[in-house]
Image 1 (tube, rainbow, N blue to C red):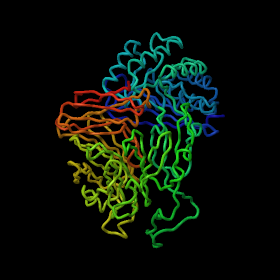
Image 2: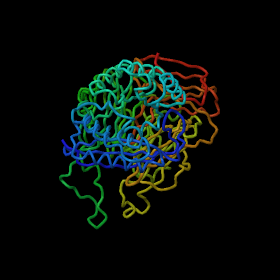
Image 3: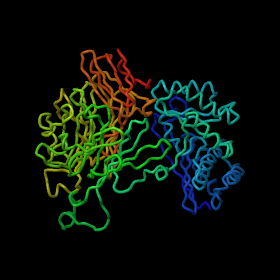
Image 4: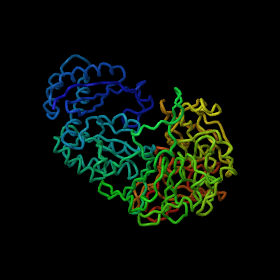
Length: 618
């Protein structure tokens, strides 16, 4: 194996991301030098380094200069190649420039070696290729004493960080045993609900690094390495996969995976649909294609999954699935799954227990619209919009079909698009990603929909319709919806939409993915003066994320809100799993109750508003 080429680049991080510890970066920008090394076997190694804004271009030139010396070398001899480059690093330039350049090349060489030998890449110097990701969450920098690192880790947790990164090899840590002890102490400092990842110090030989890595993982710390384990895990699947949901299907405390699939399609035969006039060919209607079964994977608990699609009862119910959402529609304590189908009956998979399901969409009253017709179901969400304790369903559609709201009447659904005003509002709209969210924190779940017609030439045949549409926000006032300004008037061909509180200020933000365009981030600036409560769940007997846990929040006036912990919903997207509640003018929640998937119930009273509340299963 020989190194054949190198490629460098510069990435600019946002100004407000910290470079180290928890202090703000004093520089105007955070420029990162990236490196990619390729071999004649097609393996790529990635490395990342930085030195400071003014010297970034000098650092990039140093990486180019040293990297050129590695051309023709065998990357499997990473130690020898690195030694050769270190010997050549006595060139001119500011002190430390060549050291930082070497770090990027060293990481890339180890990356190639790890991939070639099938070893996980535990040994990442200085954060390696993942450093960009770690900045956004805060990082514990090298140079801190152990006691300082433990204190800093605790402060990161207090500031609401959901993950952090540490670098093993702090001053005084001179043995593998001390590396593991360091990791254990910092894990205790950040607590069980915070993701902690670490870098193994470069000084260890690869055999030592692997040994340390295994021991650190046993101590409950995740290591900072990336490896594609799709095939090994048994979830490679196949076909036209769309949305997916993590959910504990059999209540064994491990998250299983359900993957929706769209339809059976191939390049041959090449169907022609629409007019044969120039510029008027169109996508074929889903009716031209056969439905396909979804994929259900049971988590074995050893990093692999078992395909239980048939065993779980899903193979009898093929569909044309796009969106997927979870909720306990009949309140029997088990998580059910709804799938939005394109021009086919909407589906509801009732959890019978023991990992078995039955499709009951027709019997439950949510398979069709009020006229008994199918529609182009794409985005979907499962939430209690009318605060009666029973989770309702929303499924959007194409223009001229109206979006569908199904109100849950104690285990059966009624089509409520008319009485809720949603039908009239959305007659000319086409929706994709969608979510119930309390955007103004008044205690009622509103609706956000990413929009845009599927046909980019729709206005040619139907002038009243447009390909690009502005996002839609519908405010919920006691179960009735009205259109309000979305904060963005620019028409978009929006598709995926993910929802969560990006800046931990208590107001739900939105990220949109657009066809042939950049993503759009909509930051919710609040302004209503209302209060809020966000709940982060950590399971012990139940799955670690607490997905499927049922939350009930009661304010002082007796109004109840209900939510299920979930990252599913919308369209081809994943959401912030934290449960969010608007409390209106109330400064406390009189009651917060959680029922875990294990059946354990916990209750808290007089909970202060405007906080991210951590709940660990007891």
